[in-house]
Image 1 (cartoon, rainbow, N blue to C red):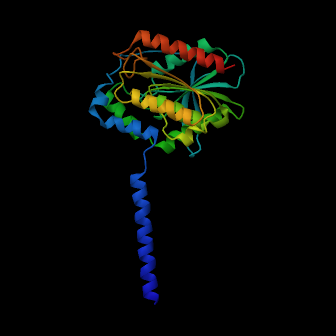
Image 2: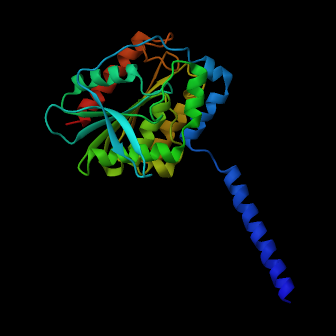
Image 3: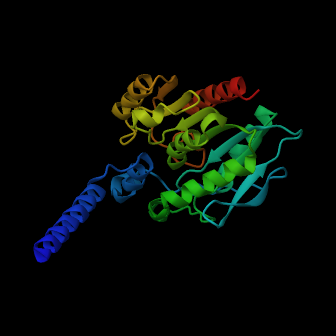
Length: 281
């Protein structure tokens, strides 16, 4: 009888382990993981032409180090407001990493917005590249637990009274939305430039702000169908979205990108600035 019982327990344990393994291997990938998986597509990599060289030396921003919940540290590039304020804009880089282009764009926003602290997050832990194949590897190497620890560390760094807006492009566009979700009630705004949207309506229900989305109608991956579904999901979650599609391609807003579209960028940036100014008081 004991042997029969032991055999039954072993079988039960094996089946349970198999079921858990099956669930893990078949689990639906997260939005950020789905975007990272695109780097395995040669056409996706080739669509990202190597950027033109950008050299920028800020006279306002500086590199800071802060603690992260995983027991490590992270670095960020910070533009501190001229007067003390709880207004923050978290900026998340493209798949090239936190390079001079991102810092230059952040300083422009800093001067345009005025009363705000800007934190350029570094989800690559110091790594940057101007080679698209290497960029794909860096993006795929990002571990979500570490990325979330970097973001949560920045939220803690901003302080308990922080009012946080987020902005990002490409890889950072998707993480802009995830950061807005993670910041909870501190979130006041979220801007996405052609990033992977969150598809889970239940997650979107927890968002504490509306979303401004700048997408490209010629984008083969974050395409009009994906964008349309995102709009529907926001509506189903009871959230508002200002979603725009421009007659341009993925990466259109980066002047260092050979496919840069100046007219689309002008429109998108004007809408972004107006959106942020209305929410960063």
